[in-house]
Image (cartoon, rainbow, N blue to C red; front, side):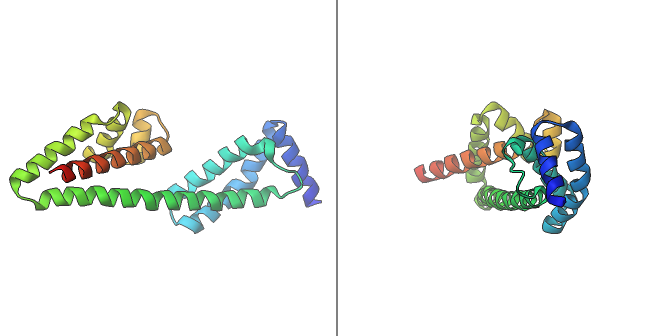
Length: 182
């Protein structure tokens, strides 16, 4: 019986039935949110994960197989989104650590060298692509969060993360190259 309902629900989703979509969201959103919170211990991140899972479900709905459990697909998707988030956060935190390491090296040097390095850093910040530079300045110089930047610029949090990663890689590469030249 449950298999039959699962199959009907998937077929209705594939047809673009709005009632079926609402039913899936109502049926699973609270349970998926609880599961996501149990994985990441952060309600905001859990909410983002669940939203992304529903977006993925909508995009992937035509490829769903009505012979397989929708519930399993959704829980597995939450888990996969959490793993992706975890890997990305780990990667971003390494890049942030490198950025702060570079800044700390600048601070530890004598005043003349420090001023040269700060000028160099600011020069490279100015060379960033326009949007990346704006996001970098909002995050690192003005101290806004990813969410605040995304709301201010009307872009997704993923876009903010992408541009920050791009900025850190560019700055790191150029500062290392400049350091080698000296």
